Image 1: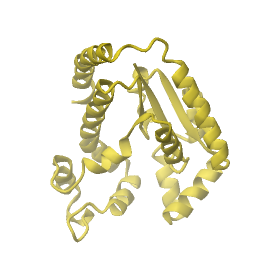
Image 2: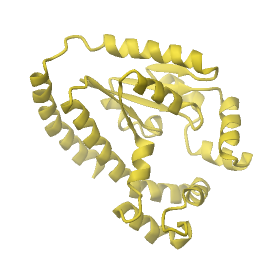
Image 3: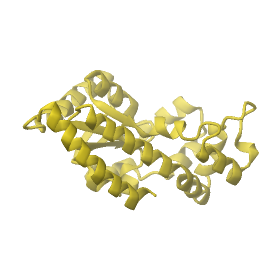
Image 4: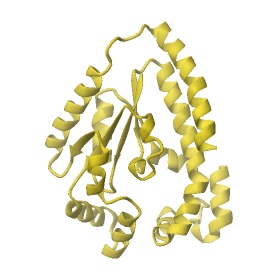
Length: 229
């Protein structure tokens, strides 16, 4: 059993890669999805965000205005750090719970889709393999403008919140170049999948899998207490 860290830049096409991996039957935990769940109305993280950022970041129905909040944090490193300090503990606890559940279900590896994997580096040491979804910087900017409708200045602010995508290349064990068409990307994902499957080696019985997972619960819980509380 092992963990695979998947990351990339904004608009690099990570969602495309994740969808193909799921088609292939892989267990994938999406940190972005969890990030939206932990700030739903009424959650502790939601209440802290409203306390620190005020009512102006809310929609009429009381939900967070993600676009407005994004504009605030991507123009202020201090406010971005504050938001991260509020949301990241909840995100990481949820990812831990899902990871353990997948192991109990018998999955031999779990792919963690973490946007800032290479920026924080804290979690990289626990990954057997790190994967970067790459596209050239010009394509990245063009895709983000087209997808979001943001101005070029706003796009640059968002990109500045992450490491330049080219600087992530030497940090990754495996690179999927998503600068081209979907067929090219799919072929590369199939190669990655074959690599992961060939890394499994001896496959334990289901009973052994559950026993190992129980041990992982204790180990990863101690890890979570040290890193994420």
